[in-house]
Structure formats: structure tokens, C-alpha cells
Image (tube, rainbow, N blue to C red; front, side, top):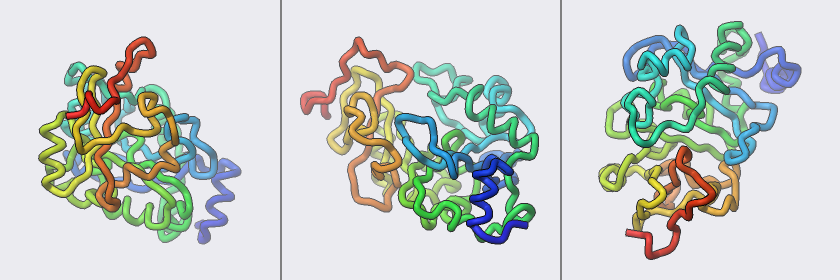
Length: 266
């Protein structure tokens, strides 16, 4: 068993392991078997918006993510999120599960991720991620696993981002200081704010902003002035800042101008 964070980082750099398992157990949403995996720990992420962040994926243990998407079994990790494709809404989740999530799941099934308590001492996790930027839930809702897992893993990180649709429910309560409440509409923003959450909302191109919102500075409509790894605005209620809004990724079109002027603000 690996007993130091330095040795664990060496094992990751040598690709003895592709990442680490943060959690294996029942989903807090529906009790089905899920897994949470952290990767891109010693190598930069290829995501140009987020920049160099540890990426985490929450998936069913027993069903490939693209299959779970088709059958609706992704509810174990996504809950009642309105952006799930099975809901056939006008706005869809931007995550392409047949890419990174499927690759991570396949490597998991091949035993390529280090297991705490088996391959390394679980107490090493805070030091492993120390000084890094950490993305809580690159795929999957963070509330699907116990909040203490995220608190432990991110105890010493430089920066983190996280979003949950479970902010109305008891299972999401422990994430208020770690994640943004995912708001589907202005009414959600008002309700979540009243409960002490900061919010992150996806809007259509022609939809106005709210007075309490600022445009994501890492987005195209925000001028891509920064990246998520250095921004720090989506850390939940631990910081005093405005709520964040972004245009629907799936509707981004360079031919259409997204309203960002005060006249477009409610």
C-alpha cells in the first residue's frame, strides 16, 4: 500500500494508476451502486474553459454512462436534473458521456484507478490535491455521494467549482459551502438565494439576466477573460459574490449576439 502522497503522485505520473477512486457505494439519490473517480491529478486537463483542474466523474458502477443515459439509469448520479436528455427539454446537458465519462468508466472496469484502503492510505487525499484546482462533479451531481467525501478531498485545494440540482433536498444541504445551486429559471434563483445558496443559471440567448447575476467570465459571452481554475467564483456560499449566469452551451452560435448590457438585466 502506498503510504505517502509523494509516492502516490509518482505512481500517477508513471501511469501505474490513471487516477483515484473517491467513493464506491450506494447513491444517496436512489441507493444504486455508483463510483466517484478523480483524474487529471498530475496532468493538465484539455478543457480550455476550465483550465488545469482535477476532474471528477460520478457514474453507475454497473452500467456504462452512455447506456445509463438511454435507459434513464443516469438518475442515480444526476437525480431529477431537467437537463438530462431523457427529459427531452429544450436545453440539454452539455456533457458528451460517450467521450470522457465513458473512457473513465472503461478504465475503472479495467482496474486502472487506485482504491483507498487497498492501494493507498485514504488519509493521503487532502495532501494529494493540495494546491490544485478541483472540479467537483465534471459529470454527475455531487450530492450523489456523501458531502464529507468532497470536504475531505478539497480541504487543501487552491480553488474548486461545483454545481448541484439537489439543493432543495436534504442530501444537498451539506454542499452549500462547496457548490453552486443549479438554477433552471429566475424563480429557482430567488428560492435558492432565500435558502442561503449562491446560484449558477443557464439561460437562453435572448433571456435577460437578473440584477443579482454576473456573466461567467470564462464563457464566450463573458469574453473568456479567465479560466475556471483561477476564477474562483463558483465555490458556493463560502465566498460573498454575485450569482453566476451563462448562455446555453448547446445553443452557442457565433452568428448570434448574446445580450450582456444593462438593458438586458432584470
